[in-house]
Length: 264
Ligand SMILES: NC(=O)c1ccc[n+]([C@@H]2O[C@H](COP(=O)([O-])OP(=O)(O)OC[C@H]3O[C@@H](n4cnc5c(N)ncnc54)[C@H](OP(=O)(O)O)[C@@H]3O)[C@@H](O)[C@H]2O)c1
Image (cartoon, rainbow, N blue to C red; front, side, top):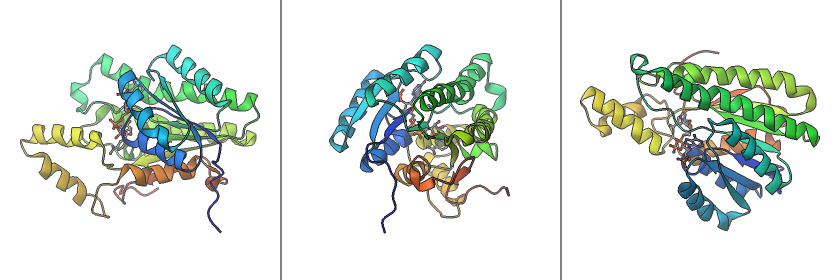
């Protein structure tokens, strides 16, 4: 019997989805027959992404900056208005700029906390309110990073702020579990998007080596020996954002080719 995702006609919001992992996730949900709203902060990039996704199903774009409260309020309102409710929230953020701890200033921490702590917590609250009002036993999936388990060199803000997302997932799973709403997190390792090239270029410049050398080192750090694709990550997002994971909540799933070394 084929696996039943239960996503045909499901109403899905994917944030930060004009490219990269979010875009691949939106494409995967459309492939399962879901109706999707994608978001990003740049109107032109978002419009272009909606245009590329439209041949695959019903998709809408909502421009919103995930660090702004009024934008988060409007994002949820417009999602519910366009789809008639929400069954699955997939929260991704823009990637924080690379940098070591001693390079970070007050504004860097404020922005990072906005994207990785305040934004997801606030949007989760708004989403839960909408789901509870409609008696929807929905799903939330938060995309973090392996930094939720092990700090990553040269990514100080991420290594500090992502950890809050683990607390958010576990807190929500516990509080919302009795209502049927499930909440899970994903810890991506290296995934082939523009982000990886940006990180590799920054590391190469700091160490006076080439991007190719840094990318090879990244690959050799992964037991499976390669960088993952956005589509491989999207499969895990669809699993946790669908009925295929109906007895899974509060889980933090690493999708990293085995890169994490920590136990537990
Ligand atoms: N790629 C990896 O290896 C990897 C590994 C672990 C974790 N991650 C994390 O996963 C997330 C997505 O990564 P990615 O590789 O897909 O990055 P990406 O290709 O750079 O895409 C980032 C997305 O975020 C959107 N965005 C940026 N700032 C935003 C804001 N303020 N409000 C709304 N949307 C915003 C961008 O759209 P606009 O520019 O149109 O706004 C874009 O669609 C990031 O948080 C990243 O740190 C990535």
